[in-house]
Image (cartoon, rainbow, N blue to C red; front, side):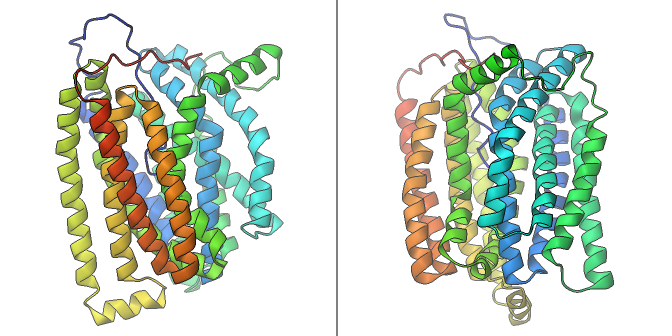
Length: 448
């Protein structure tokens, strides 16, 4: 889950208070260590998904890719509304209180499982064309992956939860190792069912490890009492803007896969996923190791009303991003000049031209992510929502038309145009929102 979909949390700053000189709560060493652990976890997961896609036939690859998109969407709808609240409250509390907060959060998740599970089943059956056994495996996967996302956010806030990322990284490494044994030891192809079985078993094992997390004396069993229903309803109501911003950011990053999966058959969708996953692995690595490391500093400086410092951090990190992507783009072009390598890639339906275009699109998206982060930190969530909504509307039309007309090449061109529009809109809105004397960030309105 790579992207701005979970960065829309705005820090609370009481009105008429002088800027604090307190140091940032998270040390650089802790942030770097967490980023390294997360990078290992994401790298092993991406390699598992990528190798599974490459060694599947095109139709199975299309189903597998669409299922992974559904997993990310399920995680957003089940947990995103609560992460921001939990993140803020955990930042300054002891172990007993943090356990109670986690227990309350698990109750919220359980309610959402009841709401969204039927929708996931219908999507898997009618859109992705999975069998009932594969749908059952998918249900195990979506719950386990949603909880794994939570492990990352807990570790960001408090270092004592870093072991959760280690468990997730170990789980993903075991998945990758098992897949490697199956590919090279028994067969040179992977079936969709086999990949889902490996993923589901590893996920259930990690959840059993998560169950040792202490929640104090607070029970995490959901009881639909009147007070709990009121609390959940209040969470939905008060976090509406926060959730819509996250949904818009998620859709901005996933709309291409959804539209391609709708506009063309599963076989062409499989080809697109094989290429997009390679480019997306670079985007995820850059997001985790560069963007996410800078987020806490940007929010801290904006929370102290030092917007100039926050913008300086953004510009410095953007240069690092640009250099990183240029290196990957040049490397991809160089690989495209090697006929032997190109012939091997074609065997697995991978095109260096597609990957180059997608890397350019992700470069533009990453730069736009920094602009949106500054806007969120300054309390301009409505601006971010408007930016993503506008770019999604334009991109969806472009991707559908160009994909139907020119196939995968058209989808890549539409991605570049859509991300360029996103960057332009974010630049304009950031300049306008932060021009002149910055306004005091508004008080957070969705704490329960």
